[in-house]
Image (tube, rainbow, N blue to C red):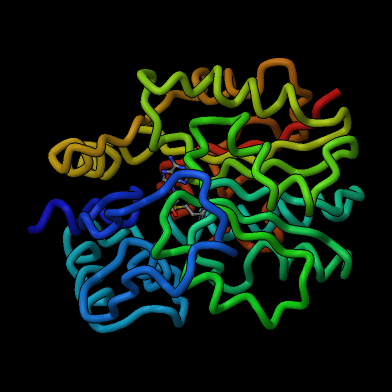
Length: 292
Ligand SMILES: C[S@@+](CC[C@H](N)C(=O)[O-])C[C@H]1O[C@@H](n2cnc3c(N)ncnc32)[C@H](O)[C@@H]1O
């Protein structure tokens, strides 16, 4: 199977369609949608297809079906990740957080961060950040009807200060007040050569006390065969996914107070009903923690 396609839902540059990215450029000045071509697959729409979203086209579904044929369980995994995102955002909103910084946000497949947060707090503010200009131009067409208090910004999140200092974020979010920093389905894209722990520590350093971090990442501790297959496919595509152990995942929360139940296999983080079938196979860890 096409390794680029197989890797497409995990990475930014898969399928090689993201050329011409300008880091930190504002969407407001980005001009018309950049190369949004529905005749070729795009990683974000393939992911949207896996999630059961509506923002995908036949070429995206073709790649999605190829992936599913190779790794049938992958749909359950991406859905578990999205379900965790929703539970964690709801949790943060319920403890009083009204601003959300969603890094590596992907397409706003419904219910997205702002929809979940606003079900609790109609005034919640959400900044979506992603490096992919094509994805952002599409997200921009999906979000205008959502009533302001939403920012979409393009950045390479491996640069925390440049990201946090973007005018779109500075204008929308009050960094003197607690917020939720979302690192969901993101950090496994960055191996140790990208200084992932230093990167997260710098984001956390700039958060106000009382802020929360919402986190998920791949591991080979569960379903090692499928996790290994994804690892192999990603490496073959030149965009390796960094699987991490429970201990390595917990290290990202150093200096934070983990919210119960701590670092757990994702579906077991405060499930809001009966666990989906095959939850024990989901090869991601998740946690939520509070900055003291
Ligand atoms: C698998 S998606 C996760 C989407 C969403 N957070 C979720 O969990 O459903 C990973 C996202 O990270 C983005 N991404 C990858 N590398 C990035 C970088 N260096 N800076 C910002 N975003 C990046 C990709 O474009 C993609 O949209």
